[in-house]
Image 1 (cartoon, rainbow, N blue to C red):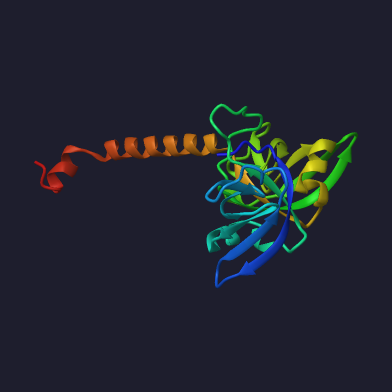
Image 2 (cartoon, rainbow, N blue to C red):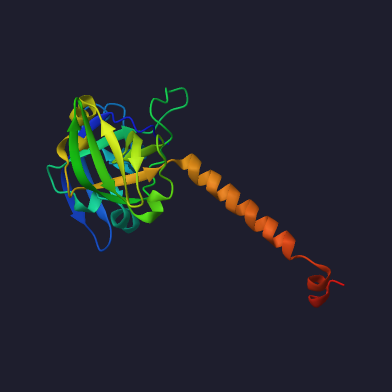
Length: 217
């Protein structure tokens, strides 16, 4: 579990592609200090497992499903990536609950500056948009942001200069791809409601005629 507060901008040093998977080597300074093999690290919002920790870098394997659903497969050596270590019990939750399981990739449609803020309009697939609400939370490349507004096919988020300086959004613009994860609480609420609705419909389907036809009477 993560918070969406980026700890460090890492730099991709090397990518080795397999038949459907990949192996990433990422340079880091801050989060590497207490890193161990097996640790969970959010890379552009995608939860990866550290397979090797060195003095100034770490490596992680990326499976085919992750490559297909995220922008990690598009990265080239020298590209910056957002890094966050898994939250520990007792840590402050400054962002929102982020699982590190990407729902889909979005595309930046436009980028406009308003006073100190920069507003991004991000096109997203329907499986992401169904959970987007005004003033709700969304993780963009692992960054915890608040939805300013939305329409049927895209949503808008606003960032301050500090966020632009310490995250990948400071180097991205129209046409670039971003990883998206919607609020996990909304998903659980939807699952609970659809499950309850299904149960109620099943109960309605039980009748004396149904029981007799199926040998219960």
